[in-house]
Image 1 (cartoon, rainbow, N blue to C red):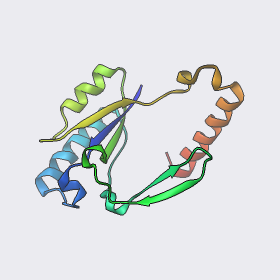
Image 2 (cartoon, rainbow, N blue to C red):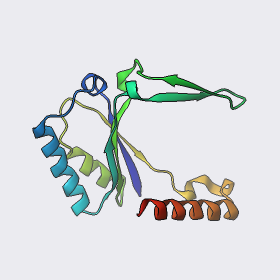
Image 3 (cartoon, rainbow, N blue to C red):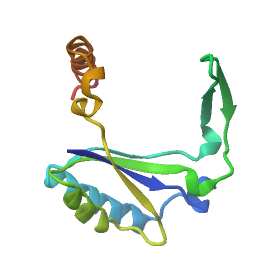
Length: 141
């Protein structure tokens, strides 16, 4: 199972405060542990929302771009991991080890093809698999 671990933004992260050398070292050691265990598929920190945008779609599909920053810090994402584990319990064990203080992390299972039932026809499934293969080849994965 794949899980996305979503690191919630803080006032500091939204203000562009950079982590300390100690924090970077702790996070590096944690990431190294994840990689050595073979569970980390991806992980990145994100720039503040002031450097981002949101795209809103109306009911007719027209898109409107809204530039950041965004007001509700507690609703923003500051970084993420994608972890491949055998269970919800295992991902929670890993997340409990993360070197955070005064922070919040959200854990969500990544939907798999089986989760879409009959709506994902064999043709759509094959097309999705081809796109994933092309994407992996382009990224060197």
